[in-house]
Image: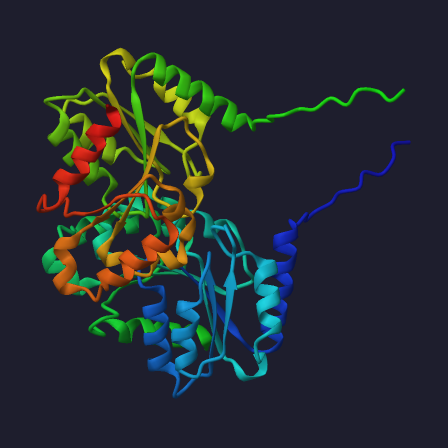
Length: 216
Length: 216
């Protein structure tokens, strides 16, 4: 008589196991977490500051800032009175779930409705690491060029929303908006694309409204 | 009587071993190789095209293009008649020495004096991987913001030269040039800093002249 075969159905990596714990903790406290990803200098902190400004009357926000080094972004967020934790990855090129786990312990989760997590500036590595967030979004930007979806398809394909920032620079840059839109759509049929300027404020309302809806 | 202790003095990683072979091969053929690193959209291909334009009368150039996916950059280089090989890393966030080893087999090394290797757009990971190059350089750029040396110190600290691109956009962006210069100098006292616009051509002569001198 053959022995019974043990089937292990769901082997989670250490990161994914902790990401699941993070998500459970966030859910228990009614916090919606958003993973904000982009190249260096795409405007992650600028978008976070604009989002705080737009939503603070209706929602209580919190921020986790991820950087290889420094805390210039966290300082800017702290000035708004928003609870913020800075993670320095050392040489690490992305945030991971254990880092978020530690950061969550430093935040007043019962006083937060929406947690914005700014990942390390990197168009490749962050997508491979579940942090326990509920929403993944990315920022592309005009000076970076319209060919980014073709060169870095992975992130464009998996995110729930895409913001194209720095549209105020369009007159000074050879950026083919139609080519960008087409390339994005070929990779991701569903994610809304918000064309904005964090400098002038143009286009931000639609992004903020979408984010508010995710919170429910 | 105690046994003799074997001391292994220099344990190279697989990557470093192949990088050393690459460097030896390049040296045998009299090729100077330059690792071109930057964020996505900083202007790596634009600088390579400008450099080809400026140096092609005196030097024979070759190019290796590294991208996660696609070959838009290699196509642009090929249009200039320069020998070029495209490496697609799949999901990989940096080039490595084995990839370069394969690419070198595809290039006419006896007909190349200067080999420009465009790394994957990433300010963090590429510096950890020796390709066998002789010169490491990086491109920062104005729309990316003046705080990049503070947030991504690793690359700024190790490179032999730094190009600040897109200075033509300075009037439209809040970029503190003095703060940038100071932050760069704090990390790297020796690397020359070239402030250029690959769009207008401004400032490129000094970069090209420096590169010519590296070739000797």
